[in-house]
Length: 325
Image (tube, rainbow, N blue to C red; front, top):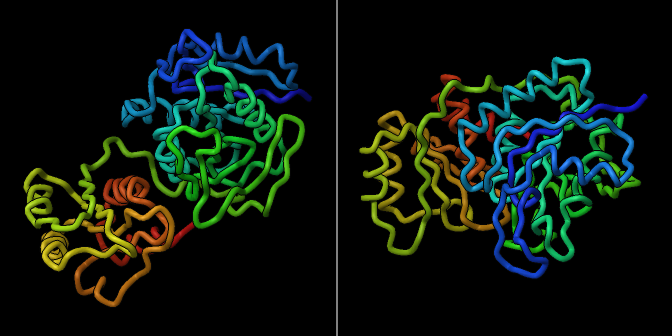
């Protein structure tokens, strides 16, 4: 029986156009989803595709309004027996954030795949159609459910929790940490590297009606505590620090963040370093801090928003969620 996939378009480079095969600059979100699917049809891939335009923009402009529309459409498709899987075309700049938010707020009953491109549709060597064909291969596989939201790029499949953009422009821009890819894929083959870990699992968080304001601070030499004070003064409900090394910070910043935690803000220690764990330290409990573990600052911010929206403000309880895969 032919599989039926719902394709939700949000724009990005995969829908981008430069008007020239060799121009470096281009405009994302220029190709409507129905036109994009029209270019997929000649590939002869075995699946029915139904497109719906959620947005058509560069992913640097995506935020809660688009996330809300996207989440609503996916939930509806998951309940609709007509659809076997959902594929989201998306810009690469914030793909990891969208994937992580959806992964925490959707059940794992049907595959949800986010796919993008690093080269515009009319560029030499455009990777969009191949990435999309690979996403279709993943979406139709019987072993795909139970792995949460996945990101398909450059012949690899990544889990939403681990994936991150690690290169500004190369087609191999995406990496996984602490786990690498969960599968290797081509338009004609798929090799999973492990068993599903979320089989039959419901959503871990309800999708919030609003996302609480979280400040993100980037640590640097000579950082002054006034930055923490400004975050508190402007009404932030939590703070994520992209700290040095293993989430380190100047002593003046530690004192200021400890005061913020004592005042009721959730404070997360993450790192500005590309890879490595931010482990729980002996002083965290006394300071009221949460260790980000393997989550980078941007994913830490999203998890913090979901925790606070769910009424979870206790650092120890929050730490449990940062420890989960």
